[in-house]
Length: 222
Ligand SMILES: C[S@@+](CC[C@H](N)C(=O)[O-])C[C@H]1O[C@@H](n2cnc3c(N)ncnc32)[C@H](O)[C@@H]1O
Image 1 (tube, rainbow, N blue to C red):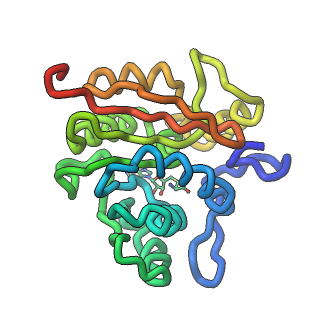
Image 2: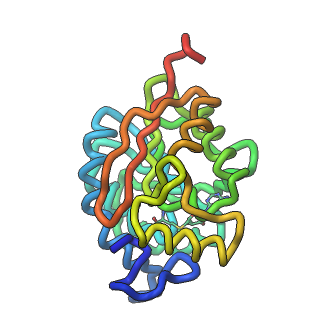
């Protein structure tokens, strides 16, 4: 089963989000937050701050900030999602969790000048390719040499989906918006190389998802 699948039911047209106790709630976040945190603990062990792009409901942010108390977790998203993210932040009362920045990856300048690391989940397939390009460009501008960008989601490899559920999800996304779609790692690698980021790791995650870890090249390679 993929994150976006619900026990064999047809994949939803859009990101499944409901309200529970007056908070936005994405069931997929409850399933994937534990496994993702285990990877982030290792990737961001030495980071002092991480920017999250597309914080969505805010569920991930609360879980990751609590699980990574050595760093500051900076949330961000389109303004339309801020109210929900703030409900989660208010309830959590965590000192290392920051209120959302108004960050549209396609806008310039970004409302933050640097970050010790960047994380984003389930965003690249919900953006047109020009915005994926903008996201990689913006991230590369923020990161110091050697810092990491961890991108979670379903990804294809060399023109092929890695599971039937990812293929079905891709069809559903493209039917909803032809500019959306599960991204191919090969295309992202080409994009990343152009902005001095290199693929460091491709971590297998439950439900046919991955975490692609990009590392900013040392200055001398830029
Ligand atoms: C499928 S939701 C994923 C939310 C959350 N990260 C998760 O895993 O549940 C996609 C997210 O991407 C954000 N997003 C879409 N276009 C964006 C853009 N141009 N700039 C920043 N965020 C964007 C949406 O607002 C939404 O929060």
